[in-house]
Image 1 (cartoon, rainbow, N blue to C red):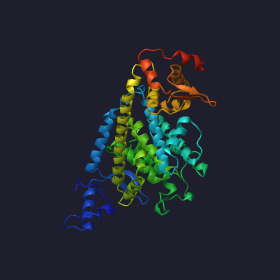
Image 2 (cartoon, one colour):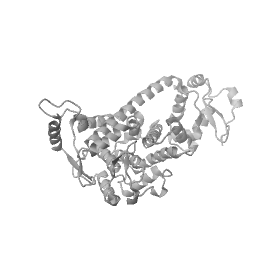
Image 3 (tube, rainbow, N blue to C red):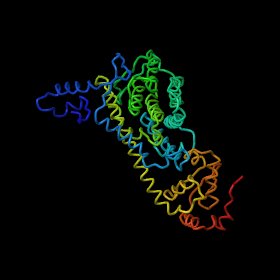
Image 4 (cartoon, helix red, strand yellow):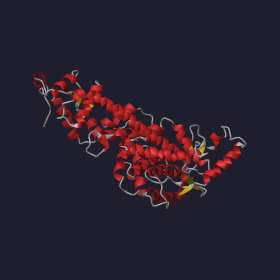
Length: 430
């Protein structure tokens, strides 16, 4: 029994029951077995019945796999120390991915390329969907500033205000509890009501209890850090304290919890990317918990599997990037006089020949100042490794067709820029 998948009644009744048992009898025995290991966390439903969770063998294994994968640093040398090459670039890319997919889970209708173009270039959002994505991106950056702080209602309100700014029908609903007269309900795609959150009058007390749990003040037994972050995610989503933006705020709190509990590599991981692949399973995990005596184990198992998959996605991504970097290493060999940001741009230019590079986009991709980004790009242009035009007010950089030859000359000790280039290329240096 312990090796069985943690099945909900809806799944179990469709499978063959053990010989000599009806489905109802088997379910009764299974529930009796599970209840012996239930643990409470301090969250109650609208009828004051407690939420509980068990820790079956498959959950213990999932937690071990997550800890082991993150503990091995995922083969990411850039993750060791803030000054490591490419670290900021990885972080910014992950923040972008999480911002986009978390918004898409809540209905944002924007493609990844368009959204990333907006975030990289810094242009203003054109519609509500893009505004949701920009809000999420800025909020995820802000979470990094809060990682060392204890969670307070004020921080929760701030995060909600950030993710919903400029996207609500009632602007004053950002950063405050929903009111009793706002009659918030959770519906499916067809408009069927399957959940009504706790009364608005209970929200202040519920938020205080959630913060105590988030900060580790309760309960009076050890809760694995990953479990605590997952339960915090569920807790805010269940209480649904806001008119809108509850899902995005809940996922933001999950990240805050993981970072605060020293899972620092979560700067490089996007769970919403995984959730977006199967949003129905995400909704089902909530529903199974609410329809089986408030058993949080269903939601915990689903989220633990999502985290494991997100860790695997990062490993696969890093393997691809390492292969690409190895392929470009011959061309870049001998360019030690270029910094890691310049080398990353050139490696990208070798793969994506038609890409256009902007100072602002380079700045946001690497988390540096505008002047540093400007120096990077014009430094490459001075060496003849980038060309540029100025169709408007902004400089647009591009890789020359003979980039490999120029890099080979640079590696061989040739002059960084040939005579013709030096005579025709006038750089706007101050």
